[in-house]
Length: 266
View 1 (cartoon, one colour):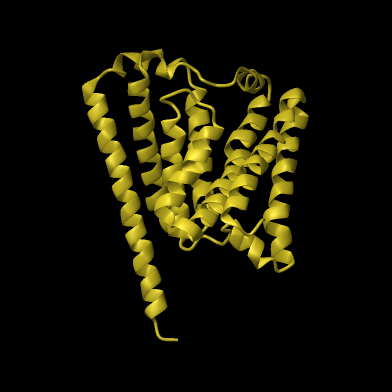
View 2 (view 1 turned 180 degrees about the vertical axis):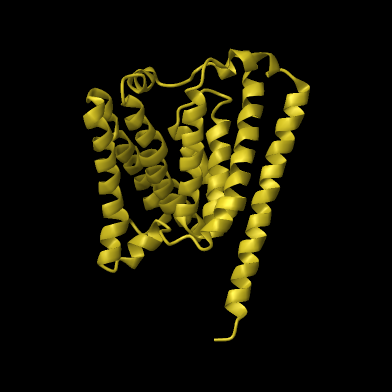
């Protein structure tokens, strides 16, 4: 990339958009062709950003995008991932409470919903939403952009700044913009603690996959009476706080293990 925080900021966002848009021609293809198309775009992205640099010893490129293996993946999957899902669910519901009774109506882009309704179309949509999208967005927002800002301004500025760009990219109406912003904060925190973009990618892919699966269920009208319930608001607040506390506990465990490893005799 450019080597400067402002260059990576200015270049990273449009590059992320270009790579994301590269998967959308799927909507104009038969499902038997669309799903392989999304896989091909994802494979090309990974080849340029991971496999090719690794084969050629491109440590700088890998470091720029914060690409490194996840240390103790089982701890990430059993502690950090459930905590992020809980916190994300709590925040999403609280934003829905703010948005009002229409919050649970479908906000999907119609062509995607129509394509998913075709035979095998759901396969391509699942790959687009839960594989290609999370990989590209995490590499650019939590990898390139957040890491560049961290090195210049620190994590306290970098994480919310990258999350704000991520939220803007999703073009939600107010107050729904707060949902991707909060998720971006959670994923950015995870990438910072784990020191790898793969941590936030796993969380992002899991969240999108669960959202897609739940969104395919029958009409959510049955939950509308709960939208204005103070008890539900209190429960979702507790869920959010619990998720954040779980994420902090995971961070303490990761840092303690890292300190023990660094203090061990050679």
